[in-house]
Image (tube, rainbow, N blue to C red):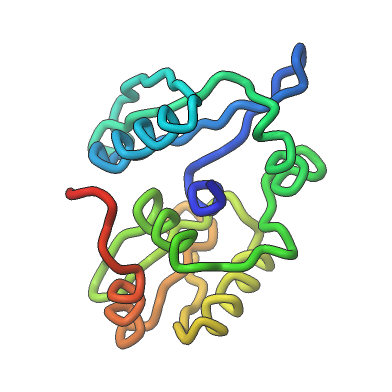
Length: 171
């Protein structure tokens, strides 16, 4: 779940129950089906809606779970003041990075990129340091929208993608 939260996944708290629900949007149809099945396997059934394309791209699939107390600890950790942050004690693993990449990564001009638009520049620089401890050099670029995006260096991009291993989905 933390890999999805590094990307376009989010938790939305209910004012009535106090329990959050999980939501994730992606244009990767195969990955969204994989997430939907993975959540259902944990008895977290989802509502799926198709969202129109953004900027002429592919349409998005938005997956939402009902509010569930199982997400409370994640909400406290990732949204301590109500805004999504990178938890200070986060440890990046291959699985977290794989889900982050599948949900919100891409390759552009031989560089693997990980979208980080929901985080501050300092948080993204911290993620760059964490990737560095795993042996992958990255930098932070300014996206055309003004937010930070992480770019792995060209020669580290292929190694990173190989390290992620076999994708759980095709496409």
